[in-house]
Image (cartoon, one colour):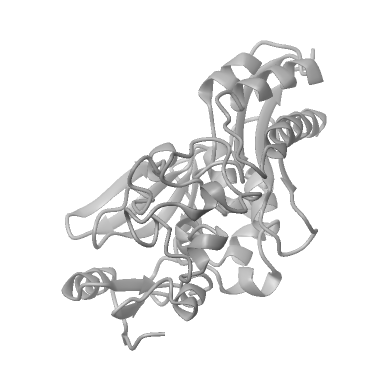
Length: 327
């Protein structure tokens, strides 16, 4: 770990100014991902600006929905009555992630910004990683790529996004509030993450000096939901495939509305509007769900070791939708 300076911000404006002042400076929230990456030599910030004491930890009703402050801890969000009652798919997703100890420390803002768990990204001894060293190549494409992306990847990067929470937020049509040198703005969740293309080191729509201040959830949609995570072991493991399903079914078992997002299969939570449209007006049956699942995985490109993910994504989608329909 290289030497760095440390300071604690007393306001959001102070934090933004401090990060802008020194090249290579980073905001520090819970640190559950950033500090690990610093220990590994993947991240080498010149300065850390702690923001955990900024007034962004509240969870409150706002404009018919709920606002979650970026400094709220994952465990606090997962167990909050407003989230458990109105947005159970988000609570389920959060409780599926990491260990209780990490959820107690991790912030929701940091959760959104956590980096991929690609083996080659995490190990600087592998020089070929376009996320760490743009233009160096991608060792995972020809390497051991069992956990890597089958959707949305490129010839420059096949890493997946690791967040469970982000998959739930994608299905809920959340919005992200940010503040930076140019003031405040709101980013629709679908536009927050970037696909790798030929610039995989640019992962989000955040601009230099911007920090996440809140996540805004719209009014809870009618219906039921389910978060389903498939992993190698039951605790503290990242998803091979996950699915967040929100489904509104009438008394005749006809689908009125549907939202479905996949995790573990792409560089960002994977949501295809055409798959949701294919569900609306159809009967809530496994056959209908299979049609939507097929649309979700269209264009999937398997690598040497991860071809199983395509079928696993289909089955996980069907099961999550079936569970949501059954309540």
